[in-house]
Image (cartoon, rainbow, N blue to C red; front, side, top):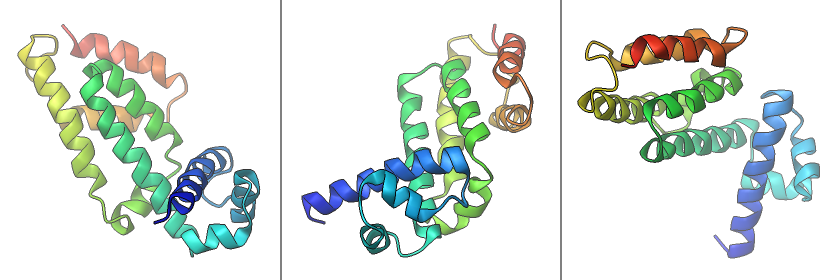
Length: 159
């Protein structure tokens, strides 16, 4: 991809992420193009369908979230993961199969690495499993005051 085309692609994905976060996955693609400062033709050359754009946005979010795991503690990453789950808008179920990316496996790997590290350091109870963390985040994502509830739950998990 030429440098200018790559810049347009990256800018469209960034803009689409913001528009989808505000308006949901059914947001106008013309609005995405308008906010990105490109014509609809540029958008459709890169992303011929809404699903193609959603997959690109979701893929970037998952890869970023998993990449952050190496720079964070388990508690910090779970807070970021909770925000991701709250803003997911149902995309994970829709996009997981069509993204070509095993999102669940990537997230499990990131969480599992952080959990093992925290358990080895004696910071987290030995009986906590990755599935416990996923169920916790999934449940809290729908709750009011989710971050506060996560903080309370982490007190029970952390030593």
